[in-house]
Figure: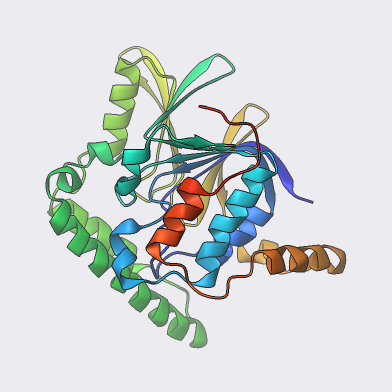
Length: 293
């Protein structure tokens, strides 16, 4: 049985990079049935498209989301810095899929401000070329980390993420970010929002603060490169979902037949080109009522 959710939020999936855990994300997406799915930036890593790495599992993630939208899930794709090329199409809608730079919601009388968060990142904002070089280096670091962790598992040792450690040290050294969470909380309070939801920094978080006499809650959905996390909203409460491979080890014979049929429908023979991925997201007709969202 799929878990029914009011809202699921993903960010920083980075499809098209070696660090993306697309298989695990596909498992997660198959396990949920959200009324609304929010992709809060850096879903597809367009900075890295030149290397033409886009394996079957990555395109299957896109196809799964398109299938969810055709089945009634309202999908909001919020642009981030790694998919900023899509910002020229902001406010585009097709069926249940909506492309936005930010999203404002009201849930149970409380105002939500949802955006990727790269606007806070002065390093990327003013030095995009340098940041792109750093992104490629980080991508290779993730691959090296995976190889080392395979060796560590073989030797009976626990896994480690030196990529995460290096990432935060480098970001700190170049002043990559200046108190991201506090900045988000402060601006949300000034704009009279009760909740602010971001991605970008690959750090899942739930944090409530009193800012200038107003209670504001900061949420971050994390990523699918290091943490494999999502935000889930159900029954009026938020929680951070953490992927656990053990949850997907047992295979129900009856359900597996159904999933095998679904997987066959999503089978991809060859990796798509950049243009084909754009068409898949932006221009492919999706069943459902046209809405500006």
